[in-house]
Image (cartoon, rainbow, N blue to C red; front, side, top):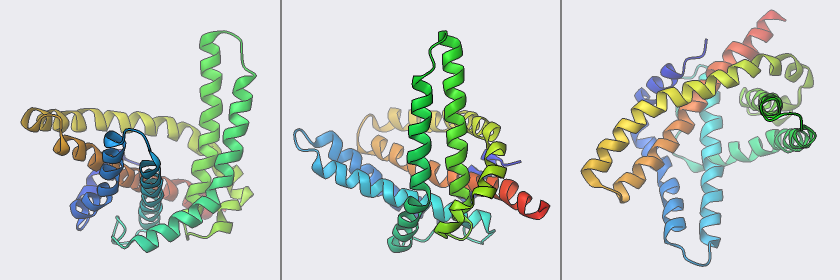
Length: 233
């Protein structure tokens, strides 16, 4: 079964991982810097934040693909062009799923009005199903980074259901491993340096590292779900 602990450990121990994540976190930090220092015109922040999310999406795709295909390197290279190319193709491959499932889930949730606890349960289930479709399309794409492979509806229908429980477990695992580790290191840095650039960069580093670790975890999930289906067929 996919292990979040393995994802964190292997991502951090990958060759030049600290340097790569440090570099990936630079645009994250700069985006926050623009947001915190801008008073009126946030145009620069929005451009930088959009570019940062775009490149981090490329990191997510490349990391997942490396793990799914059992390559030696886990993290991608620092060359931004392959990251940008992967992100652009990923948007074309996965974007329609995200838009359609989000709109449909939002519409279905708007129809639910029974009692609060039941409403929350049903709405959560709807969004989990929507997320499982999005994640499955992502996993189908990262196999070979071919856009058309994300539109294999037969594989999508066979695999999406298997991800429903796994997504819930994933969120819990991610919270459990982040709270003690990140909380402790963040507290130490706060005591030593106080609020400031060091503390802010730490959180930028945490975000970039989590993106890479999530990519590793999704690569494990790809191997367990899609490869199992392929071998079974």
